[in-house]
Length: 456
Image (cartoon, rainbow, N blue to C red):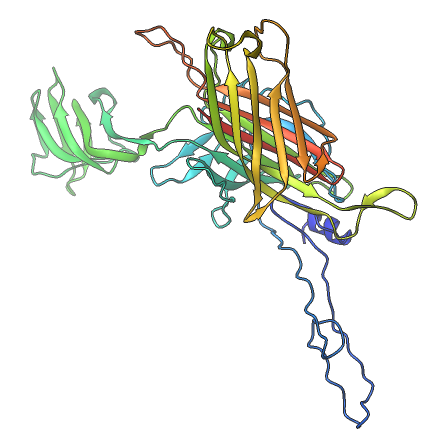
């Protein structure tokens, strides 16, 4: 059993490592050995049932438990998830996620497979890497265009393993042909070539001559380059051992050379398991490949951004304990992963908008789900209101509710993403194509934290 499992099971309560819910075993048989009035042994409840026959009851099932790896990556605010379900406020102030982009953070193959880089050092001394867990997919976020993966981070010396979920809207890659100019076309162990039509063992060809063959396992055409006298040398097994002066172009695009889609967002949450005497660290994150570098206060008009959110939550039922303190009822702490929807309305500047509404954001994270179970959370997002002529966005503000309980604290941070290059003809600078950020909220009977991404 893992360190985290020991910690939580010993406490005989439920907590979370992403979508995990732990529970203490319940039930046990209950029977009597007394004889009945006619001298027969009484009927007994089946093993595992409780109660007296015939009023046998099946035990409440333990909450589902997940012992596999989870996810990590990105930047965001740290906090702590304790074994009693307490999700603390961030230990560090939330960061504005647009400070730095991670252009190569997400890679999508032609077949849809996602891989991730976390930007940390990866060498023998610091073997940090991200691994996608193929047999345990991330929950469906329920919003078109967003894909999720569960990944784990392998940390040097296996110290405090980190794991969780990550979502992205990265588009499909574009396969391209393999094209190699004659100056770069060499044959060696990693660059095998074949000629698929009869040619002389040592031949000389003039500019424009063509031969069909393969290079790096891609079928295509060798063309004798301009101004070159081209040669091909093959051994007795008809393997090409030397080639000079030729260009090569594959007949079809090569999937492994696909050009990655740009301007994407990613978000999620991860959990770092810690030794028995320490709370588990959590981290919500959000980022994008192309931080918006234009002047947002120079933009005019308004835009609506819609997308998805994901992260972790914990809920509990409180009671007054014997010592007068308030704490969760035994067995009431529940925790897990959530998915949700995100929607933001952003006003920039311009005469079409009232001046006191310039540079304002309003929106919400809503429709929270844990699998097919609805969660009664609502996170309202906005920027601070001002008076008179507004010239910049105010500080982020948040309010939240869990059922009928208002928040005791709530916060969020965000960043704009997308290309800010002005149109070559109109010189109009585009609005940001996306917004990504992190949020957290705390209640007397619950806690929630996560990341979101939304596009225009």
